[in-house]
Image (tube, rainbow, N blue to C red; front, top):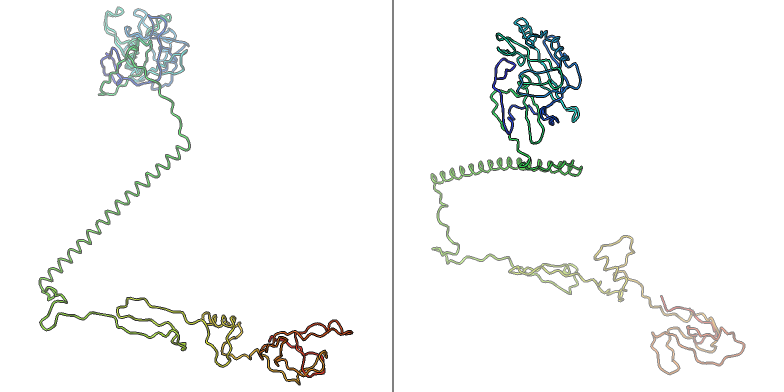
Length: 478
């Protein structure tokens, strides 16, 4: 039987081949067996402290390097003598030499109840790890009774369950300590653990077996997780943002479709109502238009059954290709009866009309100027060239003999000859009056004393009947 802090008693728990995980407050400390097979469940006691309503953190461990054996066959806790003296001073205990017990009378019991002390054991394994764990025992774990004939008692008496151990072989944590501690032992793996008890009421049992190493399947240690790279973090952030945006788009589309569907239903309902109202009104007031339609080609009582065919008005237009009237040279549309041919456009004549008064033909340059004016308009900077302006003919006027002056006297005794007078060539052929091309003079022997330049031929014909041998200089070009 175990006594809890609130005074209630509970049954002890023993599980073979496993442990009850529902009663364990887990910790990371595991103890290995001691070399002595008779004292293998040895723990190191790193500290013992007490707390009361009047004092806190009372140090009860008066020596270092204290190792104690956990034994469930012993009721009390066997502590070094110095530790027991510290308990006496802290709680006012009195040692009975006859029974070697710390008997507690009623006065001391009431005092301890008022102080409500608690003792905390700090356990560890000094040479294997620095980890520690704590087990706290309330005063109810120390409030025990001894019955006769235990230790020669004649009647039941209260006692404080600590005993004085002379050497290390007597230092034991018994069932008093196990009231608040849960011991789990793995005999095949040579280790054990000590945990504080979970006193949660009504918690179901959770039995976990301790499998033998020869049947246990070794599990590979989990591979260390590599931290995510910067690219992976950015990719995850972008993926999350895209997924969130997609979700928002889907939700928005769903709301839009729902709203659109409502509008369509409202329009449909309104249309059906209008149709029903129109049908009702039609039934009330019959319309003559309900009569079946008649075909336009159907014979009537007074007609012949032939209806006129609609055609476009046919208007013919006369188009003059070679007309001299400028107004008739503009393109005119030709309308056919069936209106199936496209309109024909023809460019106006690009060659100006021949001038009747001047009697001369325009040059190519003047034709281009006139044509440019027709198509592009008149350029104010261009000199006015028109086929209607009469230019003096470039043909030279006849020259009278009085206007001719002799420039050389090489042909004396000849008659005066006009430049336009026809001459008789050497071969005896007659020339036309308009033929004024260059003719060689008749051959004469070279006379001595004349200058060399006088022997040069001149394109100017000599004057007939003139004593002056000089010639009339003129040009055939205008």
